[in-house]
Image (cartoon, rainbow, N blue to C red; front, top):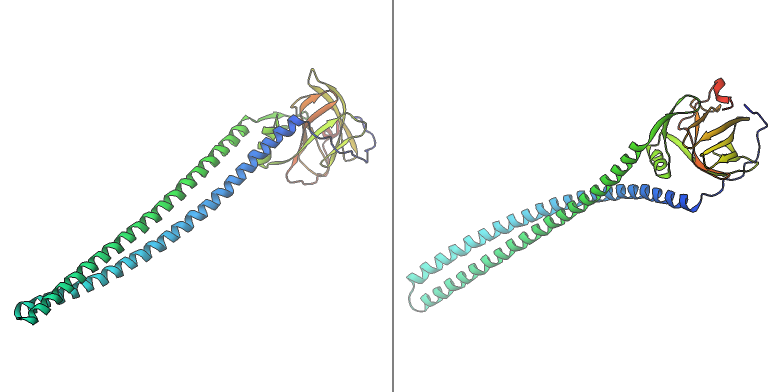
Length: 298
């Protein structure tokens, strides 16, 4: 291991190039869309529940109104029929002017009976239309909910496919690594899983190390054609050299604040430049003593 004093100043990491920024933006947009669809689904579920409750209330009110109207109509019809029968009997027994008056009374009652039956038919038709409108609104809500559910299912399926493409490898300390991302899309899927903390970096060759999370990384050499590079990792006042490493190789090392190793994965190697990410444990438990391999020069 090459040891030297830990630098105190860490210049900020250079910004990613346009291509990586666009790709990362698309991945973030996918995650945001997924969250938005979940929120929309919950809102639609609540709206459907409210519509269902309103529909039940409307149905109960309509049924009560219909029952009252039917009962009132029945009583009214029975009364009119009784009066009509009585008037007809009186007309049959009466003579002269009295008979004419009884006949007119019978005709008026017959007309009122017909009007009452017409009004009842109109009430029944209004109830039928209202029930149809409530049923249509409920069906529209179900259709919208189904469309959002389909979109969410498609988004989840895409995320699961991306996670399935991730692979596990053994790191340079001989320790089984977690899932490794080889591009921005896969890294976004890892972040969505939430198993570790991930910090992306874009580092150019400089004398001073670049701060990434709670460590420093100094790029010493790159070989773009072979996809190899050499870096110094500065952590806990130690300098750990990772010499002649390759793309997508987990570079592992220990820090005093965590029992599980940190991992550096470089996805892109260019002339005097590397792009990748640092993975750290989600929960950090301080280690009493780091293994000898943790500080060895690799």
